Every structure is written in structure tokens, then in C-alpha cells.
Length: 80
Image: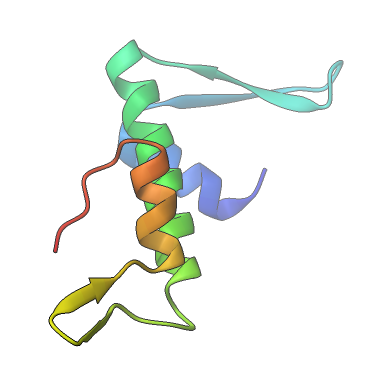
């Protein structure tokens, strides 16, 4: 399992179990924990997408970055 995924799961309070028969991990946690885990993954993806082009402000408006669009698509609040 990817160490970054494991760290996010721990932060969200989600347990990961390696299932050798299926070759993937099984998630266990409450609905709130699983939602938090998904939000952490989305937020991290958005942060990575924004590395190349940080939020740009010009001409009196904010240009949405790729990361902002990812978070908007999944309903994660953007902090502007």
C-alpha cells in the first residue's frame, strides 16, 4: 500500500486491511471517516495539481486553477 494513502487513512481514522486474495486493501470506518478520507485524497490531488500554476489573480477576478476545479467538482469547499 502506498505510504501516502496509508498516512491519509490514518489521519481520517480509516483502517486499511491488506487482502491477499484480491490483491487490494479493504477499508473500514464510519461513513464520516470514509468521507473524510475521500476529502483528504481529493484535497491532496488538488494541491498537487496547483503546484505548477498557483492561484492567479488578475484583472479583478480569480482564475480557477486545476486544483480548484477538482475540489469544486467533488464538492469540497475552496478557501479563497
